[in-house]
Amino acid sequence: MIICAGGNENFSFAKAIGIGLVESAFNLTKICLEYRPKKLIFIGTCGLYEKGEILQIYESSHAFNIEFSKLSNFYSPAKTEICLEKSAYKINSSNYICADKNAALKLANLGLDIENMEAFSVLSVAKNFNINAKCFLCATNFCDENAHEDFIKNHQKAKEKLTKLIKQKALI
Image (cartoon, rainbow, N blue to C red):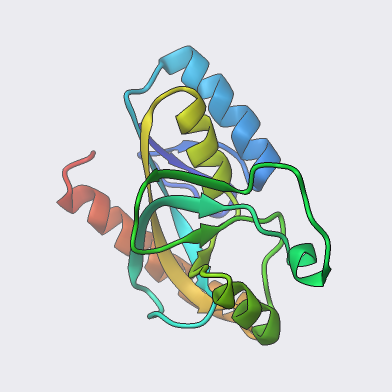
């Protein structure tokens, strides 16, 4: 089953699960209970913390939920890492978009590569249902002061690249 966040990141061939950690976890749980998918493919966009290429697609099944507060001497007893399969790229999910280059560098120094708001909850729900899952995320921006403008500028092309990838892999 192919899933996406929805909102401005809708795809005709994917089920929308909602934006952010909570909405996506809740709605994906409902979907898994109803449809019992054997595999989940999550597609969407991402921001780059330090290095990488705009409009490159990053594949991963390894995500974290590290909030900026962790860099300010806060801690959480909640589980903050989910790994279904070792991956070359580590995704960070938060309910916020990083638009600060210094914060992005600090997150990169923790070993994180890219950010996407829903990946952590997607992989967490998949693990709880014992479902194989993978994320395919196309980079639209670096996490800096131009993050939103670059996202807007590159968003449509990123969606086109993701659609092409899904067709090439014969998933639709």
